[in-house]
Structure formats: structure tokens, C-alpha cells
Image (tube, rainbow, N blue to C red; front, top):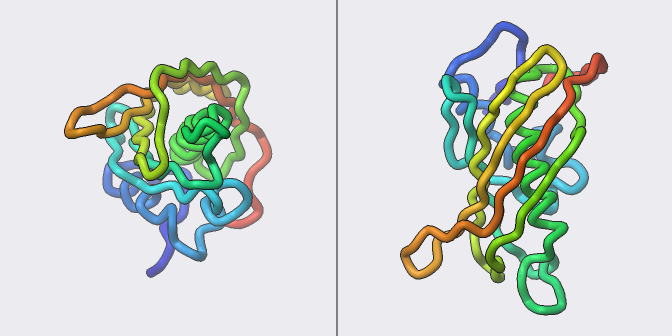
Length: 164
């Protein structure tokens, strides 16, 4: 499999799907380093025209708090990662950084739950990107909202040394 890179000027539903679908690929420099390698992000879907993406993470044993549910910091990290990955598609080779992130916790996430983080870019400016998100799980055949978040990211002048 040849990795799809984020080239300036290449923007389409197909290109976005291809790039996000390779999140777990062993040669992917984005998702196979640091915290992303431990979280195992999984591409679910995207909508290029509406600037939306859905990325899922399974609640793993090492991520649980003493009460047996997903640690709030991990839920926030998964929101942050999902926001960041969505931003990376639109920022191309530019690095991005979180400016602010606000999270509301609504329901506990249990071991083995898959949280689907539905991201929507609400503003795509020259340097600032604003987004909203919902984290949802499927429990007993019903969709359950476990958290919401808003964030602003900044597109930096610094670019990646190799294509991502």
C-alpha cells in the first residue's frame, strides 16, 4: 500500500477518505508516533464538502480511571486527536496546534466501548480553524452521547519535513 500524502491543491472526498483511512498503517508518520500509537485511531467516515470527519477509539484497559470508566483526560485527548487529524487534512503539510479545547462530560465510557468522535469544522480561516464535536457510543442498540467539545486550532508556518 502506498501512503496518500497531504499535497497542497489536492482536495476531494476521495482524497480525504484515502488519507484518513490509512490512520493505522505502520508507515504512517502521523498516527504511529507518541500518544496516537497507543490510542489506535480508526477512520469511520468523512464528508469533504461539509468539512466533517468521524474517528473512533476503543476504550482500553490502560485508559480507565480507578472507578472503571474511561479517564476524562483520555476522552479529552481523543477529542483533541480527532480535531487535529481533521485539521491536518485541511492544513496539508502545515503543523497545527490546539489553541483552546472545551469539553463537557455527559456519560461514562466503559471498557470496550467504541467512542465515535464526530468532528465538524465551523470556521476554516487562513490561520485559525474552529470546530465542534460530539462523542457517541452504542449501548444496548441505542446511540448515547457521552461528551461534547469545541476547539480552535492554529495552522502554523512550520511544515513537516517529509510529506504526511
